[in-house]
Image 1 (cartoon, rainbow, N blue to C red):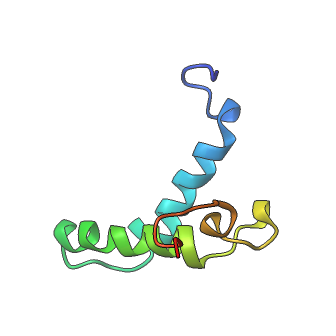
Image 2: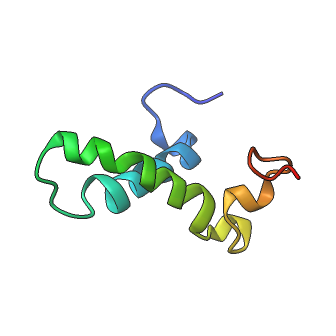
Length: 73
């Protein structure tokens, strides 16, 4: 459990929020908020399937989840 108003106790979420800002929300100038929102699903896919994570030794989260939808044969 984390303490309210104490970002230091919730490092993983705070790091994800920072990544959202740096790699999606402010990564480039969007023409509108609608355009920014439309770019979000592609960002999430890249974040979860293509982008390496240092905490996972360079793997993506999808590489670490067994039986992920779309991996069934």
